[in-house]
Length: 495
RNA sequence: GGUCGCGUGGCCGGGUGGCUAGGCACAGCUCUGCAAAAGCUGCUACUGCGGUUCGAAUCCGCACGCGACCUCCA
Image (cartoon, rainbow, N blue to C red; front, top):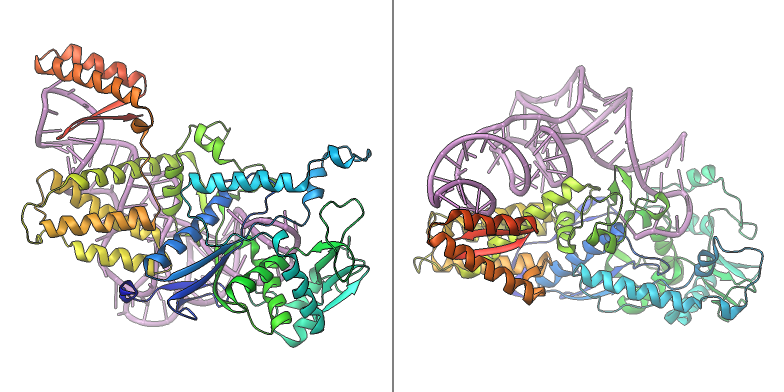
């Protein structure tokens, strides 16, 4: 727990809209719950940003020395069948065996989700529970809500009685909504004939005969309501009250508001001490969303095969791009911004490679560089509500030190070099979760080939045949291979 | 319509009243056979109009512009 002495960690609690010092309920343990994906389609970059935010949170808490139980669910029940059927022949009743089995869809997109998480180097959660795996817990929760008088059955479904709840408890705190305003603004009356109030929401839904995913319950065959799974599973694995709940801004209402209400109605306690919400990734100022048609998948991103993309970008470029913006701000996607991030990341990683080769010129710390101060500022930035852009800005100060030392223009002591190595390994790899993406190592034959050309060019240069040496360099450049002469010799990379 | 938020230099973006954010781009210099890489230096902004203050990008008000949520959405 030595790391816990590194100053207090402040996070913006979206419940209070204030920056608060984070104090876990039962240190050194921390309970973290993040709303996971609904696995009925491919995740897009906007989704990735949200999970990235909480990946960094998880990494930082761990770095601080906390023992984090990180729970991120998979939503695999709800309205899957309806979505799948959308756009299909609505008249013909398809035989059951001709349809995709819902769990087939779930498995497919769960696999895809995991692939994307790995691609962007996101750590796996401690527990990844599924809604279908926790039906009993959800049914039990519905029972508790009903026993306390905040749920009512209607036509095989069970609804949460929002007006009754709101009369006895604060409701709408998280999203800043007043129940009167809500009532005044209601417009859609479709499908609410069973509800006593338009504000009520289903906690158990009766399944139509054609519905494939349904389970027996005290109220007949059905499936759990949209918001219930998170409440049931967070309660099960983290307790009735736990430390941090994260998710995208767009989940604040109604999803998270409903979670709070459900937990209070069922167990009498407000479930979450710190709410954290990540902001949206936008494209031309508009939220990236499937309905906007402006989303693209990680695969399209890597290949550049999308009308919004001028070229492909690596997963780490995108990760770095996102981390250069604070999680609570909207981030606008653009090719120019991604290219800037690509260059910046390249420089950062090059400096890290240089750092590994660096030797101190004296045993003592040098006077020319304040490495301990740099480390302190990096910590302070992260402790200040996960301010990754400021932390990265500090790291570039370190990059300057490293390059200057490598150029012999700054005399770093061995203690400073060692401290820089530790700082960069910790911050870049462990906290920011960046990793080396080497093309050369992926393809030994290509690297061998280029190395041979590098040797030929060196020989030509040695005999002052610059026409020949430049021809090698230019030809390789034409093929997208860029040579870089450094003090340690020539390296190459793709353009 | 209701609620909340945003508007920063060529671009992206941080910024918790005073002190250089940072990255990319651009320009000059050093290094280099030339170039690239690397280093150094320069580029000093905060939508508009009022107000509070010794002092505001930062607080308050108004205006304009933009967005998110209010329905599944990270």
